[in-house]
Length: 190
Length: 245
Image (cartoon, rainbow over all chains, first blue to last red; front, side, top):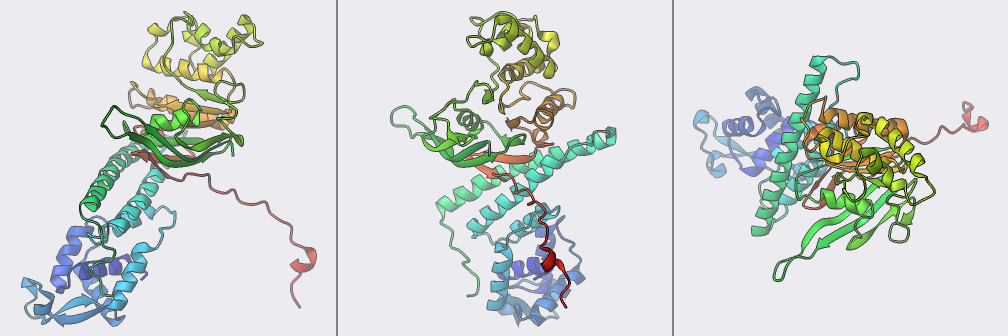
């Protein structure tokens, strides 16, 4: 899958088979600030995923969705085995070093299933690597002015906060894994 | 590679009935000459242990540290000319009074006369921007001067690797204070070709590094080895370079 919006939408459908409006709501909550979340984009993504055989339509009652805005739609969405494989391939794919690596890692962390601690920890490491690289480059030019210096400081301060969050997130994921051993890919269609 | 920390683990025994503490867990790291590598870590992350092991101050419980290809257990390089300089902020009044004497101390006992050692010490103090501290006593120094003098003392033996733990402790997080010390470390790497390994607890200390790493619970993360340099351009064989018919 080339589009992160499609992959993110697929992750939500895998997490819980549901109706389109519910996917939109959860997309806005989960990927706020990371991916553009216009509803028409999300419905487009659902259509494309359906056409590609990655998700399928199912009766809403089966999906167990509480789709108040969508009474006219009899069908919800559920991931197919092909969709689950595509999702797994995407979430496991290594993130190439680039200026977008930080954002890319964060999108994938947001798209990780709650029980999939191993992948969450691995993505956290990729995110950390990207943050460290941003921090390393957060330096005002030698001939820079006050604005250059302030912008460099802003990037450094953000990196500091992100590194602290990563440390906390890792500790929490590990402690949850210790209490409840992760089951790889549980809940996904085979 | 100038320094290789190879799968190092460091355990500290604690009192009876208490579990030992693993300060460093299977940590690996490689540094090239003239490279500045900064490691971000919070207190008790293992950052100081990492530097102490990299300098040979501590012998690891497992794994090895090699400087110039030689295991530090076989040939200690700490304080040896062309070896490793470890920056320590403590200045013992037993050793000397004036700052210049403290900085010169690592050179005494060898072939250097006191006058020569103090000349080298003055040059090192000048290099780190602390020439004005020459005649002061360590107690009279502020945080900024203390770290600079400590770096000068580590530099006086002309090390190829400099280890600096938390250079910005006690300094304001401003370009004039902490920023200036980080800039000094960068200049030592860029201009003097000294490999510098430093730990920081603020991300501002990572800016300008060739590589930025992190350490947490004794686990080191990030780009642990330098990226491969692009290989030299190879001349194509004339015959093969011709367009095919």
